[in-house]
Image (spheres, rainbow, N blue to C red):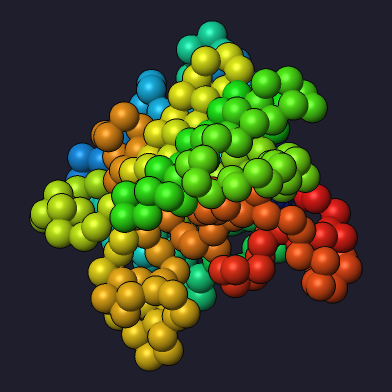
Length: 364
């Protein structure tokens, strides 16, 4: 009889062990505790991020585009990174008991809160993320209302996920300066402050009819180079800045201390306008021409970058010559004949100032 009771006791203990290690483990990875993954990110219409320092970011999907903080176009890449992370992140294992207290302290002091909503405004997920787990194999995440944090990772990805949930405003704001496709362009004016004779205005009268207005003294009976004018009209789609520098200490004084290079006005057939005032940037430690002079550029200024004031004078950005050099054309170039001495197959955009719109290019 005693042996029978002993057997029953052993079986009961084994059964309890099986329940704990099998069913308890399944509970630990339930959606309420560890369901950080969102399979259908097309259902995501709003993402709110907030950190412990008071920084907040609101991203909303409207008419197929993402809007930042209710009024700015959002940069596509960082939004796509968040959506991809939400779609692929998977809980790997609960935080070990030995690390539990430290992770909870990190959550309380440094955690970033992520709220995800659907089209109706209903919450899909709310969770917190912080830090990097051992050996850079994921970040710690805690579902709202849960007490158990998890190490969460994207399978096959080496790195941590916290950085993908940035709360820095500048990481999300769209950097577009001009974005007018060729078929929507109505006019462009480039006005050079110190070289007014190089200023010009290009107007699209019809699809195959472009005028370029310049100082009459430069024309001297020459016909408009229609190919150059047509090529130039393609240069205003997806023209972006390097980044915003709003809030830089003494920024207004810096801008006032340097000469204005030019002003650019772009108008679309729909009546939308965009203006940029471009200023020289003083020579600095990043300037390549600090060691090697750049032809035609005063060594007081950076040869590769400029300041630009855009968005109705509300924002200051840095722009790159690499992007804008094709826009910084001169009036006389539109009335010069093509340079037929160039190598066929050369692009229409010069690699260095002077050799413009080589003939034989694709025109793209």
